[in-house]
Image 1 (cartoon, rainbow, N blue to C red):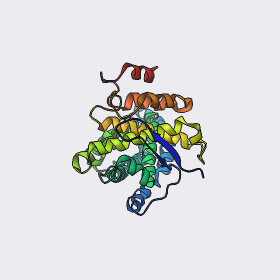
Image 2 (spheres, rainbow, N blue to C red):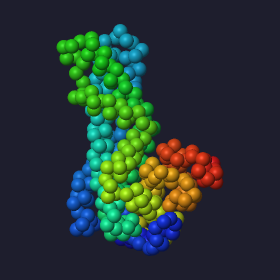
Image 3 (tube, rainbow, N blue to C red):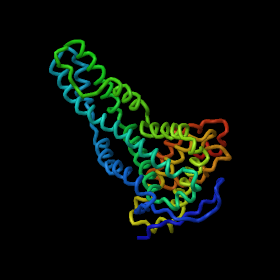
Image 4 (cartoon, one colour):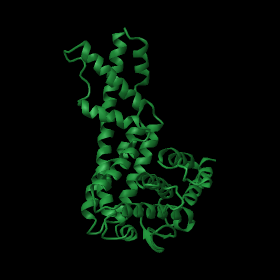
Length: 325
């Protein structure tokens, strides 16, 4: 295939160089194989998770009938039977998020280590760079599904309320639902209360990783993130690069990854991605998103509402205008 894309990273504190990134079928090198294998075991389940959350219908009808008819035992039981298996699914999503978080930390530890520059990492460790991109793409897709499906949070809230009531009403076992310890349920409540739970999990994990590992400096991490954002942007700016894809969806994949990287950068960098001196060309990034009208609104909204520093006074007015109009 025309598999490797030539990318020029022309801005930021990193040197001006040319290198290739294979976002379609990079094979792991000997030095990558250990991390790659561990992460691959997690990522192989991502399509099923996305299929399940896209198909999540919720128990809204049963819950509404149960609330409207509190004295109807039939309606109460119908709602309970409908919501219990859904909560099992929600627990599966949450537990998968923990696995993705661990995988992200493995990848960042490898891609941000001080042994190489950001450019060298992305050029020489393309297989795990691709996995990092896949995690970001999964994250944005999962969170889009969650934001557009209020039944997810409603179902879990109803389950917890009803479980507590059933425990008080009957200690003989009628309250049995999902095998869900209270501490896990509390963490799930916090997870699903966030509009973008997966992104919030990864942002927190990245910040924690940097705090707890002195060898992983903020500079190394943000260099890697900003360089990857440039890679994805330039790919989408140049039709010649896109024409070398085997799969036409790879362009959108790169675009979503670019947005995910920018958001992650904005959460871990003290002044964020929007400041004039940031190593990310925000104006060009926003323009390239606008060139893809079929997906631009959701991605622009992700930058507006999921970043940390967009509303800072230091954000240039021109950038704010470009992103909001």
